[in-house]
Amino acid sequence: MKEVIRIGTRDSELALWQATTVQNKLESLGYSTTLIPVKSQGDLVLDKPLYELGITGIFTKTLDIALIKGDIDIAVHSMKDVPTLLPEGVVQAAVMERAVSHDILVHKGLDFLESGKGIVATGSLRRKAQWLNRYPKHKIVNLRGNVNTRLIKLIEKNWNAAIFAQAGLERIKLLPKDALVLDWMVPAPAQGAMVIVAMEKASNILEACANLNHEESALATRIEREFLRTLEGGCTAPIGALAEIKDHKVYFRGCLHSLDGEQSYSIEKQVSVKQADTFGKNCALEILESGGQALMESIKDEHNSIH
Image (cartoon, rainbow, N blue to C red; front, side, top):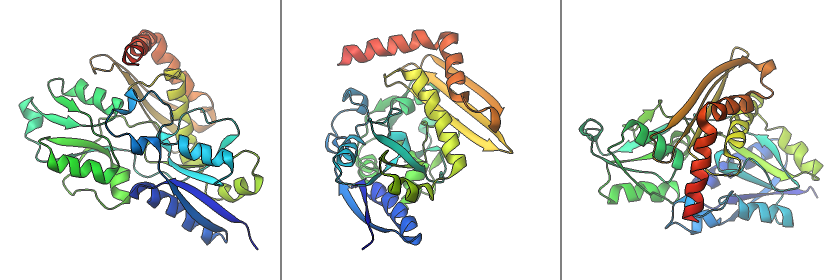
């Protein structure tokens, strides 16, 4: 009897879509699989902003434990939710071909953008900071929950709009036709990408997953996550990063904002793919040296006062 690959996933509609996509690809290659959905702490605690929970990997921790205990063979994640340092023994097995990385605005009309007054919902520090940098008079309200829950909350509340990842809404066919693409907003590192993780010692599982790895997506997300890891030093901060590969070159945009959006540091650079080894780290070091280090220290102080 062939070994069955047990695929761990969160139980939201989007997470199940992602896991099913991986399942279908593995089965098309001749592997037997089964889905094992679990609830993460990030799905259970919805009354606080993510950054107030003080936990890295809040959406991945439960699956990490299941993986280490041997209850599942692989876990499928939205890559932007995955901490840059994986637990000991857990490794990246594959990065799926990336979808669109943009943030979008789901709204009830765009007049509020001109009026200077508006209420915009997001649970993301990065989105909040970039939005306030552009629209400093707007009010940002916390929005948590899975995609479906967040859309319902937007309908029910007296908010003007909410910010989502375009890929998430497209994947489960909930993208409104009038949604506004926020092409000026630098996305989260690895936004739009799905990652498969497995145990380092499970060579047969790693071999199966290697068939699904998309090299360009893996390179782009590695650069973005390297940028994030170098900047944050274990502290959650409003950080955006996007690496795009065209004609054997890597085009990179990265930014760091203060929590209120008033201060910002950004970088735009390009290198050849052959020179991309420490590109993300080097871009982050430039930001730290140009004033970002002091900003990161102040963000850490703010976080410490919250906790």
